[in-house]
Image 1 (cartoon, rainbow over the protein chains, first blue to last red):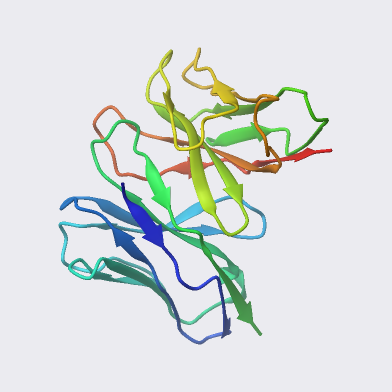
Image 2: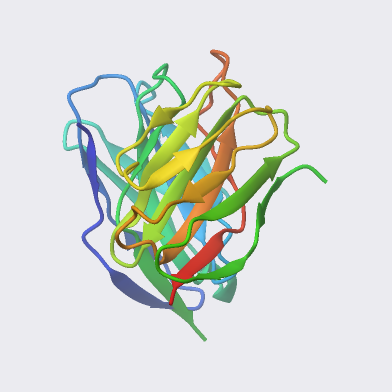
Length: 116
Length: 115
């Protein structure tokens, strides 16, 4: 079974600075998806960024980028120019494609606080 | 607007009572899911469904039941057999039918408290 580990329960960063959230996972699969989801205090989860394991290039979405190290099974999220609105719980998640129902396996989450 | 609607947002239950949480989506998604969120444990999958009239147990299905009579609806019943039902419950949906991007779309959640 796949597992996802987020080793940082809480982090804080000053506004406009850069922060990196860590995620490691365990799988024997070669093809899979990895995700970062954001859950702000309003509680609605939204997708931040997606990485397909067969793609060597790291995914980027505006201020959000990942460092995907397949051999090390590591998938960290970098947030540049942090904004107050980035304050949220961040979840790393794993999915094996073509499995019935698109099941995601989530990590325990990292609370990120952006300070002014 | 398209999205997922969960109701109620807050629910209180006495021990021994069954309660049903509603989840409706108008995204025309095939697959729907129920997750439970507890502090420090992330999200754990309760049940999921890929098509109407079919659903599968997730990792923590004991004490819960679901139905999928319509594509748009996937209600979750928390039964009296669930030993620790106080939690935040999230419903989600995704495109399936072999055309997956893996992305799940979530509702705003329902918080259940057992008194």
